[in-house]
Structure formats: structure tokens, C-alpha cells
Length: 183
Image (cartoon, rainbow, N blue to C red; front, top):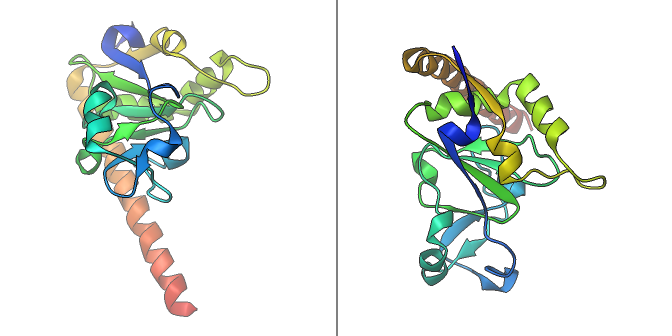
């Protein structure tokens, strides 16, 4: 096991600031723009998902999400994050979010689960700045210490946790269907 600073194993990027993209720039059909409210358990939720035009996506291309990226809330609930899977490839993220893009030394899904550990969440909440509204920035996140086992172990850990999450998600869908049937 080795300890790394997040900034040495991943790129941390803040979303576009308000002057780059305004609410009136949203369109009916286009590329989804993830905001803080869309950060769910592991994947994004899709309610009230704003869309941006192809021309805005091209102009703001450094904010396009890749598979394996992790998106954090930059303000408020700063310990909330979601993992970008292949279904959300090419989506964008808003200025109220931070994107973590893992480099080769870390397995992306392992890093996501590392961020989900309660002691990591607590650490992120503790480093947040701001009296009224906690917030994190790229520098605070880059200085976060990450404990990494071997790549093989990272993949095993992520595989086990991912399988458990899949099972929980399936059970939740079954429960929802049973509730609908009973109504």
C-alpha cells in the first residue's frame, strides 16, 4: 500500500463558471449537463436534466465527461459524488461540480469507492471552506491523500463492491415493483 496525493494520480477540474454558460443557454435537446442535484448513488439521476447545444459542447469541450471520471459536488454536500459509466460518456458537468479524472496508476472504480468510504467523506467535509455554504476547490482536492494497494487489488476491491451495488440496485427495483403491484 502506498499513499499518494490525489493531484499526483488524477486530474481535478472545476466545471464551467457562470460567465461561460448561462441558464438561458440550455436547450430542449442536446448533451446532458450534470449538476449537483444529479449526483446519485454511483450513477447520475436524470430528473430535470438540463441540456446544452452541440455548439456549446464544442466550445466547452474540456468539461466533457469520460468513462471512469468521478463528479463531485463542489458546494453544499461536498462529499457527494457519482461515477461516470459508459452510459454517461460524453455528458458535461456544471460549474457547481468538480471532475476527478484518474490516471493510469489508479483504477477509476476503486477511486470512486475510496471516496465513498465514510472516513474519506468526513475528511472532505472537514477540509471544506466557507461558513454558510461549505465548498471545495481543485487545490483542496489535489492535496487529498489516497491509499492505493496494487492495481490487481484495486480491481478486486472495485469488482466486489460494484457487484454488491448492482445487487442493491436490483433489490431496490424489485421492491419498487412490489410496491406498485400492491397499490
